Each structure stands twice: as C-alpha cells, then as structure tokens.
Amino acid sequence: YLSHNQLTGPVPKSLGNLNFTVLDFSRNQLSGDLSFIFGSNKTIQIVDFSRNMFDFDLSNVGFPASLTSVDRHNNKIFGSLPAGLTALNFQYLDVSNNGL
Picture: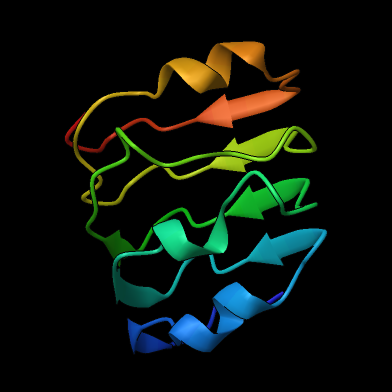
C-alpha cells in the first residue's frame, strides 16, 4: 500500500519480477507504463492505480485469472479493453476518465 503519498515518476520495472496479491499506488503522481505488473503467470487479485498519470496502451495487456478488482480511473491510459477481461470474474472494475 503506497497510496496517498507524493510519489512521482515511473514505477521501477523490477517490481514486475515480484508477485503481489494486493497493490495500491493510488493518489500519487506516478507516470509511465505499468503493464509489466500484469501477466497470466501472476497471482495478483486487487490493484488500485487510480489518480495518477500512468500512460500506456491497455489493448494488449494480459491479465491473471486471479484478478478480481481493478481501479485505474483518472489516468492517461489509452487503447481498448482487452477481450481477455471478459473471462475474469470481477467484483470491481473502474477504468473511467482515461483515453480508452
């Protein structure tokens, strides 16, 4: 949980080598591509990246089957929602106020 701080810049890519269950970067000033956090081999369940400045194409991001909650509202994410999202069992999904 790193929310509600004044973190800036890109998230270190080395975090993509780790496997989280919950990841909360919300309400910071983080930027860049965060797609490396996801992948079909991950076990992440809950992610909140809302209210940052993340800027990447969501179209080709692969999501793990374990994902149940995604909050990415108020960023600069573009592209389209991947078709693979329809196979997931979401309890919460918010991608509002982006460039999708």
